Length: 137
Image 1 (cartoon, rainbow, N blue to C red):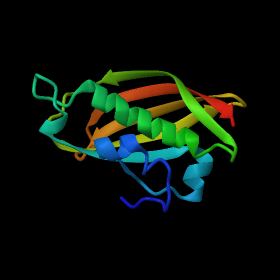
Image 2 (tube, helix red, strand yellow):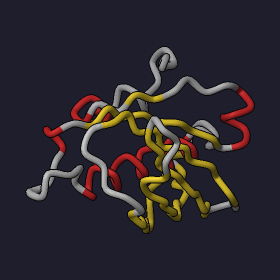
Image 3 (cartoon, rainbow, N blue to C red):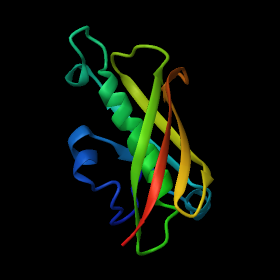
């Protein structure tokens, strides 16, 4: 995945720490609130049962949804996640995961975002939703 030059989402400390790979966005992606974030998972991200920790999947979904919402904002605006829900569909141990997030509704102050995490065989790993609030800087 290629990254946008000076993309604050790609260069965020959490993205660097966990290894998120933020896909470059087209202008249409930005206008419609779409984001794709990939993560190669392995045993470094496992829980004691030998599977990828649910918190890692939640962080991946949160990153994708935040990026989707954040890219729609005007200059001088920022945002914060108000709530996040995630449903785990199947365990995973090592695979390339891809989180695809889409802003479903954006109002003046609040937005609703959905995300699916799929593996490299297009199997659904998790579904997530969040609500974001816009902050004027």
